[in-house]
Amino acid sequence: MEQRISLVTLGVTDVARAKAFYEQLGWRGQEVEETVFFQAGGLALVLWSRDKLAADAGISDPGTGGFGGMTLAQNVRSRSEVDELMAAATNAGAEVTQPARETFYGGYAGCFADPDGHVWEIAWNPGFPLGPDGALTVPDFNAAA
Image (cartoon, rainbow, N blue to C red):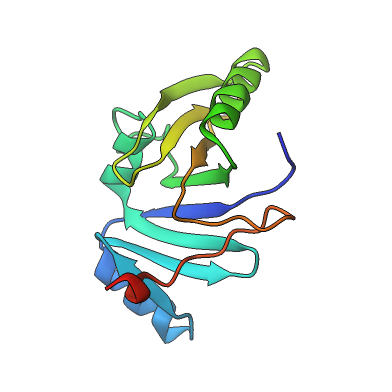
């Protein structure tokens, strides 16, 4: 597993309120399908419904102390790399919370929790290009419209 983070997703109770908060701080994001993406250097900060984030990560009860409302993600270059990293995480002692599967956005992803319960998503997303150094670039969602 490469030593990098592609996305930090914050599970929020009100996406519009959270987006407005970050915009008041001077951040500029793009909203698509009830999700807000902010380019933050070589990674992205994402705002998404806390309940949807928990369900996507395979966490059954996000209201308990077991889910902190945040996931870390590493985007990879292929579906097979998702499977390889999920297997490596399992072998290292991670708990798979969401087996690798086809995603609603046309990619492929799985999630695991580290020994302290921090949730990681390993994802291949053909719509989010990675640079040679692994840096993620949030696409211009308005260009496709």
